[in-house]
Image: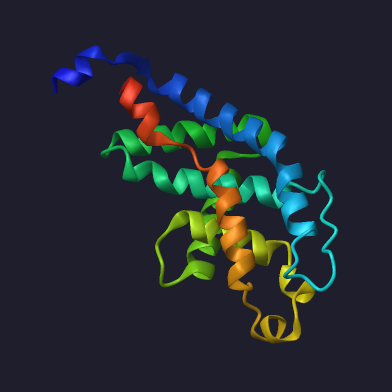
Length: 180
């Protein structure tokens, strides 16, 4: 309780702006690295040749995964307010309606959960979502291609890189007290 008095107070709107700006900046700067990891992965018998300007799916995976984690760090109704404000901001960025963005994010969150079932680890789900959204199974050796599952060695490598795209709420909340 006393530690909250020492933290800098920050409004939810500022948190949302900081969070989304950081996500977009990290995706823009980091997607070429993801492409390099994927394209040069020795587990593939042929390079997928993912282009660094083909980041739409990746951006949506990163957004959906990070938004899915918000309720782990904020109690209701603060978590819902933050999520709502994120969706509102995304409507301006993507020039789509609130309902369209909400549905799109939910669709990606469901996909992340589905490809990662029964695990609930969002990071691993995001990595698997990258694998399936970029249809990488076709570039693997026959055994993994036929199973339509990522080679575990590739998955471990992509998990390590994907950690850079997960917002660190623990560090943020250690420094800031989020207020209405």
